[in-house]
Amino acid sequence: MSPRTGRTARAGQYAALMCYLVFLAFPFLWLISTAFKPARELGSLHPTWIPEDPTLDNFRQAFDEQPLLRAAANSLTAALCAALIAVVIATPMAYVMARHRGRLSTAATGWVVVSQAFPFVLVIIPLFLVLKYLHLINSLWGLILVYVVWSLPFALWMLAGYVRAVPPELEEAAAVDGAGKARILISVTAPLLAPGIVATALFAFITAWNEFFFALVLLKTPEKQTLPVVLTHFLGAEGVADLGPLAAAAFLATLPSLVLFAIIQKRITGGLTAGAVKH
Amino acid sequence: MTLATATERSGRKNPQGGRGEGRRRDGAAWFLVLPALIPILILSVGPLVYGILLAFTDAQSGRTRSTQWIGALNFQDLLHDTLFWDSFRIGLLWAVGVTVPQFVLALGLALLLNANLRMRWLARALAIIPWAMPEVVVGIMWRLVYNPDAGILNETIRDLGLGDGRDWLTGLATALPAVIVVGVWAGMPQTTVALLAGLQNTPHELHEAAALDGAGAWRRFRTVTWPAIRPVALAISALNFIWNFNSFALVYVLTSGGPGGRTRLPMLFAYEEAFRYGQFGYAAAMGCVMVAVISVLLAVYLVGRLRGGEDA
Image 1 (cartoon, rainbow over the protein chains, first blue to last red):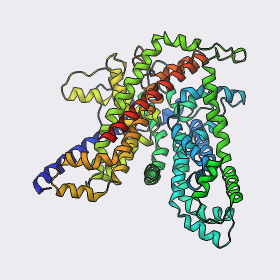
Image 2 (tube, rainbow over the protein chains, first blue to last red):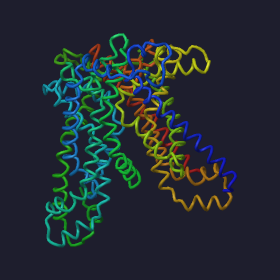
Image 3 (cartoon, rainbow over the protein chains, first blue to last red):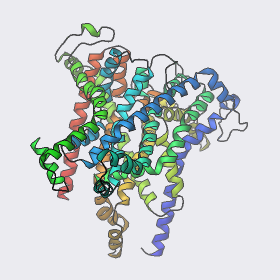
Image 4 (spheres, chains in turn purple, brown):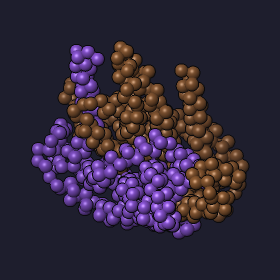
């Protein structure tokens, strides 16, 4: 590449990058701006980017209008339980998928791939009937069960990638030293997998925290509903929304997943890469 | 079983273990798999089968006990249900309309992120935001952007002197394009990350060799980069198509399917049919049709692309 064409190409690349930055950032910046604007500015026909008179009133009003704390507690419970149960039951299966050749692991891997394209429509009605039969409609436990199964494919995918990254020689060496299979799994493999397990659990947590469709169908009363469902109540029946509190509540609901995602971002992309490439 | 033990044996590193050990290892594997397998069978495979069966019944909410087998009647009704086919057409338009620009934009961003640029970390951080956000919040956020009076989009249009702007989400002509833009924005990160992963596995030497041979940027992309990322690109666009076709939350929050059904995706239609009107059997039949058509379309697409790849 000659230096001259190199420089114009560089300039073009930076210009393109700037366009992406604007496109990606502006809706989010607008959400934040709206959340901090007083009612007077929100009513203005010429909205500004930066609130002239920033206020926290919208946040206060949001908590007054809807049971946000209750909803956040519900979301937290559902997401935490789902994430913990999912990794506890997925880790052994992922180990088999990564290490054990045979029909079992082939079938498991096949299911993981197919379920990525899982048709929710076809599943939600029977699931509703099954949970109704079990008296788990309008119950967080019913939702947790659904979230566990729903987060399993990706959890298995990520975890199997992490297991493959642990050299089998380590396990073999421990076996030569006379350690039993269970002992090896607990004292050799598990500690090496720990960071991957944490990353997977956090990802499962975020997915459950953000989930809307199942929560909408399965939770009926406002006391049981999770944050995303309660957020839609701000929109009102006719789509007429109180913009300030709506923006404030939406902004708050995003913070936990944004923070967690920032923490595990590298591991997620790493896990994705490992899964996609080594397969 | 013989097949399993055969692969089992050939896969084993230490030749001392006989058949007995193989079976024992299988037993241990089952033991490890069961905790995940049982919930999967009860809450995912089971409902899937149950859902297909429901499509052949007249199941309705409130009277599921007296449900009767009615054969293919639901499917016959669906065939003549113009509203369903309208929503199916909108679903396809939406899925293609989101998947294609999403892929093109994500590829561009992935190439930029892969190049050695200064603002890269910022772009990487920003590109994660749509991924981490709850879909409901994405919908709410863009409603604020599109808001006819207090939104930034119309204000920008007014500032640039391009007119008064419009009510994007409730206009018959603008609603679908407006939600498609949101869909593209929301789904870009996953696609970008997947493509970036593919790019980073492209051997660097090949690029340099091609450059030394005097190949221009486009030629290098076509002969070196694209072949390397093609499998990832194919897989991610197929998945994106399915995900988009099945999407719900975003459009539910943005337009609830309006105006006049112009953005009523099949999922929204099936949801209303099942949980507003209680027509479980009919909605299940819709689900079956959606899955069947999508599977066929994808199979044709994938086979076509794979063949095309072999010829090239």
